Length: 311
Image (cartoon, rainbow, N blue to C red; front, top):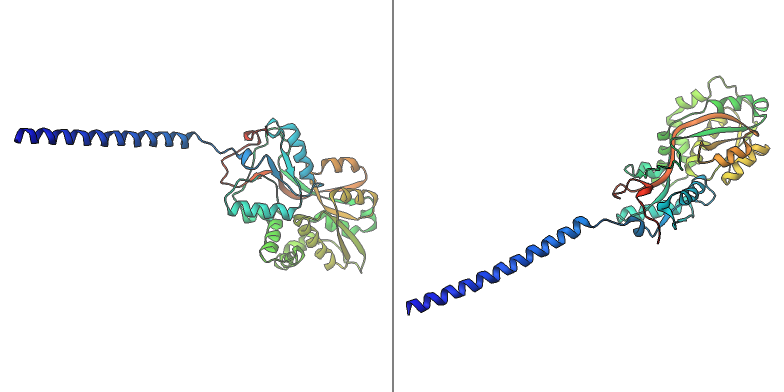
């Protein structure tokens, strides 16, 4: 009886051991399989964004440059750029970041999005389509120096930093107000800077001057602070927002007096070259500007060449 009972117990334990070992082996195999899948799987960002770049206005310099990038990069073959407006692009960026979803935008500094999302990054541009650091130049119509020497002198002395411009744009965005209102507040807080631009400039009595600008918040910021500076000297200032092509055309033909919105050497190169002998270039009013394709920091991608062509 004892011997038979011992045999039964031994058989029972053996079966149980085999069952447990088999189950553990299966779990380990499944775990190893899953770990391998996780470690080998990489996000196809090109597919995730549907081979689409989210852009701004179709006539903007960065949009023209993006079209060139799509033509030049093998990794962008078959891609499309969805151009609409700066506001629409920013809205899509907000939604993507809120949900931590992939997105590729046409981005630039200065812009309030970089003040809001400072960890965003530019994709490397090995072909140099977007250029490196840019400057924003002041251009005047031919003859302005003779017609309005004091306005010309202030325009020539106007200069500020990327952080100044982005600060105004972000301030306006956060307070849900017009850029012109934020620009007034910036001038109040930085009158010493404005006085430097006015150094050696004589006051006038109601002389009219027109600044021509693109309808972007960056240029709304610069145009409005210079407008206030000129008004402090007695000028009657009009700021006219138009498409970038019209900016250059109006300065070239004398319909506008000056612009603070010429991005060089890449963004507005085509327009600049077309009219280069028909305006006066006063040089950079802002240095350190940049354009390119931009992604949120959580996207594990570094270069345009890391993307994949559409099938």
